[in-house]
Length: 171
Figure 1 (cartoon, one colour):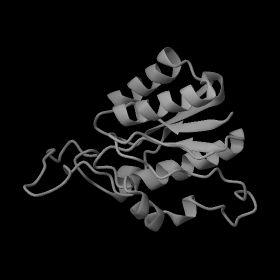
Figure 2 (cartoon, rainbow, N blue to C red):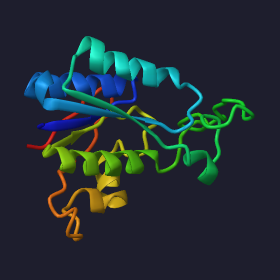
Figure 3 (cartoon, rainbow, N blue to C red):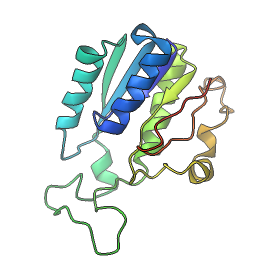
């Protein structure tokens, strides 16, 4: 396996999957999808369809993260909260804090176990790690090798790009 893609089923992660498949071939790409109690769980069905039906990649995994709603609450995780975007806000109240850090960390662990050297992600305009400098500041542990014995050879992660710029990978 050469690459693991964090695949939500949305357009940004679908683009990342397409680019990884173009570079490495479907037989060398795995994708991981997280079910974390999100309101629009339909995306996980799209992720499966992208992975298994359209791109026919080597391996697809759906991982439940049911704990998320026990540590944070917002409109994406709770049907009792109306989805809204307050005046002057950049994003609606559906942004799940820390989600991308968790997703990338878990994808990196899986990539390590598969022998993959790359982890791909696609993040939209409200994604918390879209700006490369901010990404490096918030998640420096994801950009270097972990000191732990079991995680010493973690794959390197590229700085995510916005939907307009596309997604890039690290060789």
